[in-house]
Length: 106
Image (cartoon, rainbow, N blue to C red; front, side, top):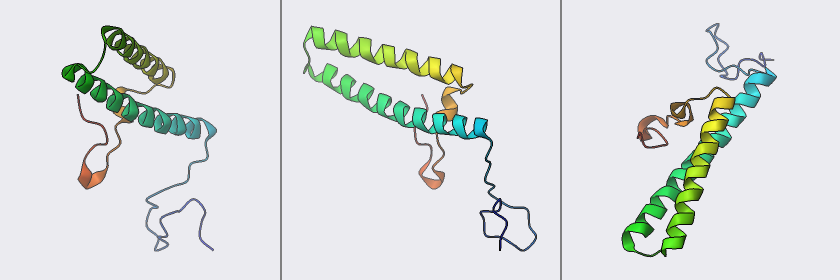
């Protein structure tokens, strides 16, 4: 039977590549990081869509104001949550290997 802390399937005496860390603090921070990454991705997509709509003149002045305010508030809340969990903006940018980073670098 293999060691539950060795998830790599490597039993040839090498150091395990992936370990299952069951520390509750780490699990919570990792989950928060994942959730914030998804929220940041959606925030950036919404921002780009809003900019496209601004550029095409699709929105009324009132709609532009509401969208701008909403995006600023969301950005502020994201900053608060990152600070609360000790995360930097770049911590939310997952490396997708050959595909590059998940989020565009600003």
